[in-house]
Image (cartoon, rainbow over all chains, first blue to last red; front, side, top):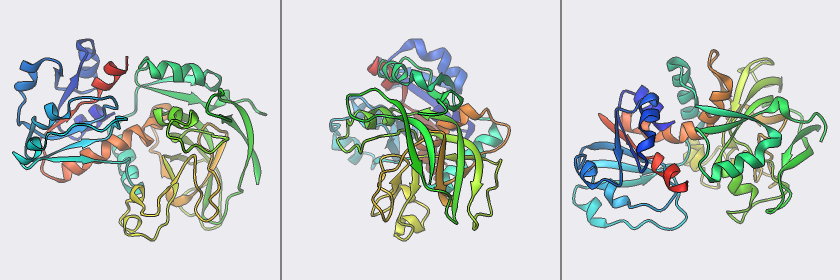
Length: 162
Length: 191
């Protein structure tokens, strides 16, 4: 969702991924550049160039590699929540007065603003529809990241009486 | 009260199964919605399996809800039966703290009421989410859905959408020319 929204907001969108196979899909969603995060040379080319980084990664990862890509006074916002603490090298933030921040969903007025924006720009999520009796299968597939990009339950599939 | 059908987990290690439960009839400020689609968030799985060790059972997950309004309370002017409506991660908050007064209910100081796993303001009762036929929510926490969008694709906007929207919108309010979204590394690592 981040890519579609950032693109529609007029940002130059760069997507970081560990998987080169995602490039075509990333471009379809509105990404201007794809960076393979394991490639130090590619990462180095983007040093000190971003106004904003939104980090949705919920697994352990090297946050300092991304903090170094921010311009002075700019912000990395963590919305993914890894289970264990991340190691922040404080020089990453001191050296360019950078911000390492977090954000939780959004307020009600802001949610309405987002929906109205999506209505105006024709933005919806890419989904895979399931009947509700497939929910356990959907959970298993989510754990393997086997979904593009969100399951949605068709409530017409709900039994009339439980 | 009226009876809803839904799907619930009854413990951390049982599968979600059909479940009947009671919801309140709409109060003066409430909107009743017949749910058409509900998105599946990773939080649903965490909560159903008690991975955050705070799950109240039975647990009816689901906080990416879209549907049609079926009934409204006497004081509700901005929704009427037949309207499209949506509900996200919150169904209530204290409404009086600094955060709530600034429209930042997600940072409610005593804590907002989650769409599932409560606790309900005042009573402390559990709340039941969107894997169900209907939901009854105070109008302040009900969103209008623009007509013309694919309704199933709207559902994930209520959590995944606004979660990424909020920092980008804040970034746009500040002068920003470039943006990066480092999200997909997650799916690659999870795989």
